[in-house]
Image 1 (cartoon, rainbow, N blue to C red):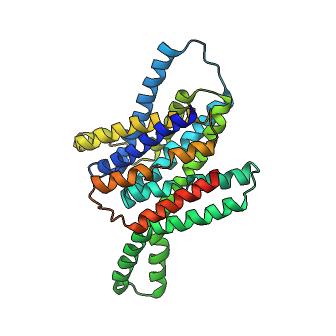
Image 2: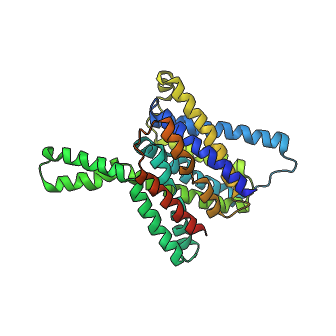
Image 3: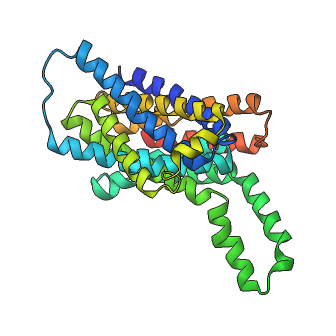
Length: 315
């Protein structure tokens, strides 16, 4: 049962990556993020209402710890994780953004080792090295492009120190690699928190809505587009708005499925299945976008290595 729920979540997450890529070319990412998270609450609340009205036979019990854990999970996943992820898709494209997300189980294993007392086996260490090397191959093309940009800007630099700053710090931020890792780390924290929450409070739909609410509130406060939301909505591309709205419905459904799957199977297994998006995203992206991301054999080998490393961690 848990594996089936996780597979459905995988399909939805993979579809969302492609949809977000298309939508980001038509609507500003910050506005799109606000639309998506808003739809999380609306569609999640609709699902919760249907559950309570037609499928709920017993009365819902209150669980304070589960309540706050689901809220915290929303902070990490719905707010931080998704914002970083949307920015990664915008910079890297769906294939590489999806590949970087597969490092999520890596962070999950490290966090579990540090805070839950789980000891890493030598196989886990080997898998970590394999994953890092795979991610290096996946980001090979962006690195080459970044070096070309840095070389082109050398004539405008006054000193070598300025050059080093552009190549290292500025490049790291602008290239999207830092955003990709922060997204993966945030999702890992969110999944661990939600996994603990579902064990004490078996309410996946309510948990998904609570997380969406926490993410929506935080993003509303921090998003500079909130104040001009209605004005920008009127000016925005209708197709882009629709796609981000669909993205919101898809992501909240996928999150609910992941939370539900964690009740039946270990968190690490649920992560492995749902974050294997490159398996679906890479061929879809190649044919839909006519290889605009310049996916090469090196990229594919990198993705395969990452997936092999994750498999070693789980096994």
